Length: 436
Image (cartoon, rainbow, N blue to C red; front, side, top):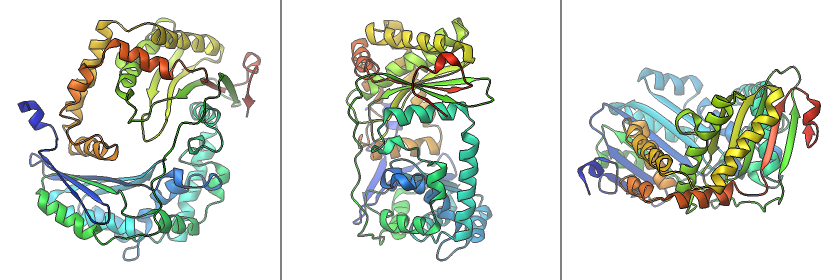
């Protein structure tokens, strides 16, 4: 291992301990700063909720710090303010995630509040009602956001109604209106527990001390009703492309969201797909799509592509914001770049530039406790191994242009791309799948 590799978080400098109840604790000592960051997750995301109560898991995450059995809202937030600490929870599709930051000397307080919020929330009715009202207001506002509506229409058309990805983590107006504080308490009682929980601690702490502190906080947590981890699989291909049109009255801009099933993070061709996506719509001024659709042809206000790559088959998308009169031209231009990526090997210069970009940005993420904690959490969450970062550069540079072509063809070359357009009404767009 080189000196540079030795300075990167790896199996030799990350302390990992698994408690008897299934909690995994990972600690990375970073004495160069006086602060400490924590990051963690439990399997209690939106995939465990019913469609009728879509958005429940995210409401649970938002309400964890509104009151516990031993602290009310003011006591929780006052304790954090007194030490200048931050702590937050957020419900995602697969997991509930949390993160926090404090001075190293205040880590005991930060851990104690985190465990209290995770283990003993009371979900006071008045706070749940406030959060529910805020979510409904946001959803009502989002219904007039063309970018949000295009993305939502793409997702709902790509994933069938029985699939959890058909529903957004935030829910919709009907489902949120159907959720009460008792639902939050029931979801917490059933799904929150220590099985496969991850807790990462990074900063000016001794690893043994941090492990002991976390063990005292979570070691006696039990929940026999906690279900097994749910796996989400790619649904069958539709076999044909489709176009969805959402009319949003009063708008002067249209937004386009094109999507196909993308690779999960553990797919063998995930990193080649990442590099292919970077070339398509990320690197520099948003890759080839940004250069063609926005810079050269002037058809879009923004244009880019995005690869998901989580615990399941998240979509690989191309997005653009355009003048309504340019919708068809922008779609055609973006599809030209997709076709080019799936039919031609990328140049040696394009490959080298993006390999350098990927390996160069990794050390930048590791300049902060938060970035280190995020990468360590990812390594544990996806089972990548604690030496993943140390070998990352070698992994990226062993990928060839043919690998990118195969990944692009496998996903972007599929026949079931969904194209969703949201914006003002236009006769030329009413040829398929119109909704309002």
